[in-house]
Image 1 (cartoon, rainbow, N blue to C red):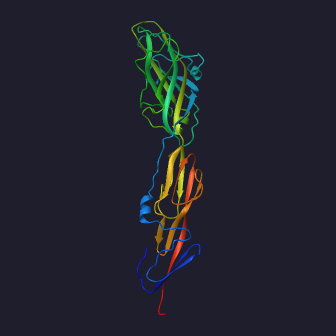
Image 2: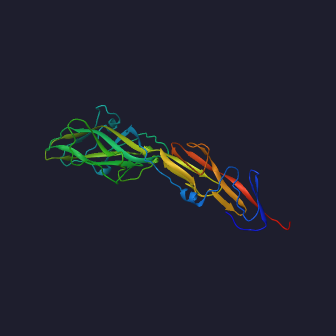
Image 3: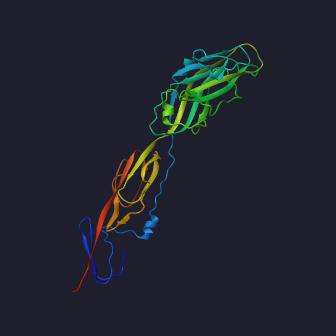
Length: 318
């Protein structure tokens, strides 16, 4: 910046102790050692861009630890040895039906023992059930009635993922429900998944006009949870408007561009110039007004500033 002024001299002293003498009709802010004041055009370019690159989700798979017969659905056929679902070993939870209108009770399984990094974003839940029936003919069969998740020990009514029209096969088969991007029309956080009450209920309804007995079997239930870890990015600055600012949460492997949008600040007779940053985590110290990086763990940036001080003198006489 310059302005006309006859018979004036000015001294600009920066925090490093450098003094610049100005005479004649022009005076301007000193720039300090090795630093230039960005022009308006440069400032127009320096805007913040925070880009999130979708990270590949991580998955964790666990088998149910416990099983129980639960009549909460009004079922008419209970489950025998429901704890057998803990291992895929051919030892089944068994529900025996004697009436063609029977519906099994809920086979409720939980205690999966998930451990997921704090702050992760849950992106999908898949349930695999190894099941069969003693008869799978059109005359006498079992098919899904309900397949639901248990949240905090309570059966979720958000969605029923049962495959109602599919008979349970006469030999054991693994049937999947949900998926890597399926949240079962509900919202989930890490504590929901790690809760011992998180689980699944399965029930089957009898079909066909045939009389006599028929058995439904479940050998094993396992759940796969897809999640995306997150990391915090903490921004500190004594001056200016950094972007992003404060503390933000970012998906693992997101690309973050941090910018000091106004790297030169004038406060009365003091000028502050952003000279760079110090960092921890995914970034080290550097100079300039922007830095981009891929975030893979918690990261902190502290913007660094140089203070310059203005002194003005007027020459009187000779």
